[in-house]
Length: 233
Ligand code: OAD
Image (cartoon, rainbow, N blue to C red; front, top):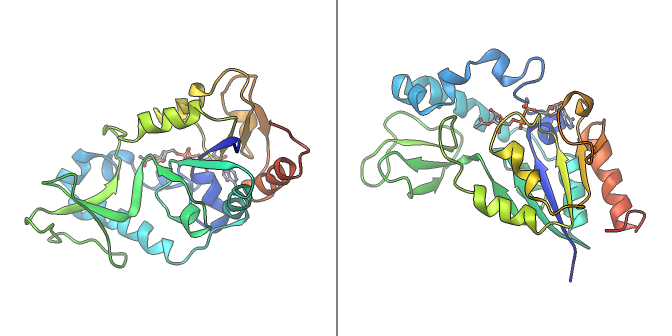
């Protein structure tokens, strides 16, 4: 049976594709207040502003491409059961050919009914407007997990991590819970790497191996070592 490798990804894996992270200098949360654009209250108060924020981010998706880090994950699939758990709402993992991708915080290209939360659609194009409704006449909203909302895929994600033979954390500042705590579901002695140019500034247990580099260089190298048997799980 193939060994299972779980990738826990955040905004940093898409940075080299040209997508802004949240908490770096010039990141999204430096130019927008979370309370204005990423909470259910913000959507009630000023839906146009919230829709605009996500429309711009969705539009950008059509202008960017997956990078070497996303493609390295595809290569890893040749020998391992690779499970990606991402906080990202972009579709770059899928577009690079990553097969098992679980989105914790939703997906930009999906929208859902405010009246029937189970009614989820793939959005055509990049723009969701006030007045766009589900078939029952309820306004559609971004299919994004906002601050203060539950993370529906959390338990599925925890179960995946608990089965991992190795975990690679890449491009997340480990600031946002519950996602930031997921690696703790790994079995004791499971090797865990963290790839982040600021890994030395993040807080995590000593047992995790930091790689203080960008994902586009470090992840392909780690993948090569796993594929050629330099690292044995
Ligand atoms: P953050 O912006 O908090 O963290 C991004 C991390 O990526 C930082 O630690 C950077 O150092 C690192 N990074 C930057 N460039 C990198 C590169 N080329 N390679 C590798 N790492 C790099 O983003 P997240 O941790 O993903 O949630 O943020 C978590 C959640 O907070 C997001 O899903 C979003 C946000 O608010 C919601 O909107 C609900």
